[in-house]
Amino acid sequence: MEQKTKVLAEKGQQEVVITREFDLPAALVFKAYTDPDILAQWMGTKVLKLESKDHGSYRFETRDKEGKTVFQANGTIHACVPDRKIIRTFEMDNTPYGVQLEIIAFEALTENTSRLIIHSVYESVTQRDEVMKLPFAQGINWAHNRLQDVVSQLK
Image (tube, rainbow, N blue to C red; front, top):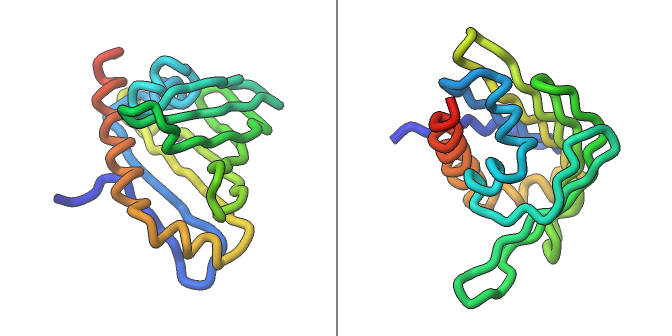
């Protein structure tokens, strides 16, 4: 099955560009990234903090069935332009991957469709390449498929 979310990681570059078209208005895709209840549903993680505003911050955590923490991430939201753009840092706790800068753009294609473009810049080519060894593309596709499903029910 073709993956709808495309991940472009050019050799020798510190960046990754992720694109996905949704059968959702851009405002709803933006809301999926900025509303803690919706974000928790499609990401499958607990939202401990989410300040969707300029100079805000966030923190996510996922635990397994035994209650052991298996994922933690946090960052600073540098800019939040409603329905258009989020600029933030992203860092996973207890990993060697370092901090990345994410520019997340929400582009209206029609009244009911949109394109999401995530431009992530890593500290080094080596860090970016290490992240690309993970099941990164599969994970982001799973998450975006969930986003489409969860947010479609809000329409």
